[in-house]
Length: 107
Image (cartoon, rainbow, N blue to C red):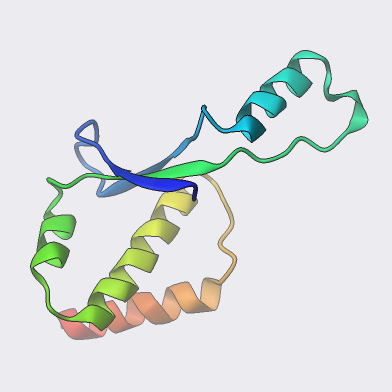
């Protein structure tokens, strides 16, 4: 992620990922696509994590004093945004462990 920003455009989602269109990698990828990429690898543009401050999960996390819960939830929310975008998680086992810890606290 190149940066994190709040947005009020989201309604149902706590977080989402968008492409940083100001990133030079994005501009290079666009030019390479326009010229047929000429056989080179297209660099992946940087991403921005957008957070919906009005979402119930974000509000509850901001009120929480449990730093372990906040850390786990932040990672899970980021992974959810990646999954939504069709990305593969780098640490599936970590995702499952964090999700299990969050559910154990909720039950």
